[in-house]
Amino acid sequence: MAEYIAKATLVHNGQIVKIDETVELTEEQAKHLGDKVEKKAAAKKSSKEKE
Image (cartoon, rainbow, N blue to C red; front, side):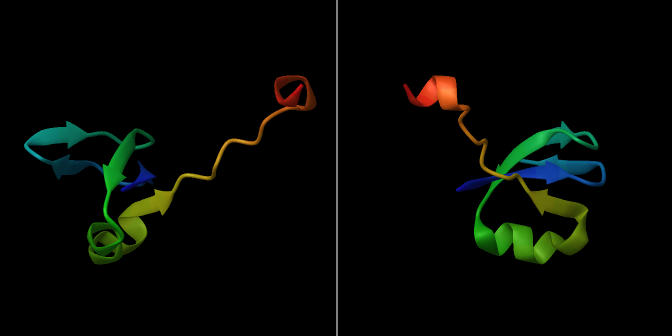
């Protein structure tokens, strides 16, 4: 499963997910929700973290 950011208030597994909160969804779930969620970009490591 991937992390998505809620762009609308959602109910997922009986829990309320508020706007801008992170939620884990399958690709199929995210596709069904359409523009109500946005895939969370992978965090980039800084050069200091790579060392």
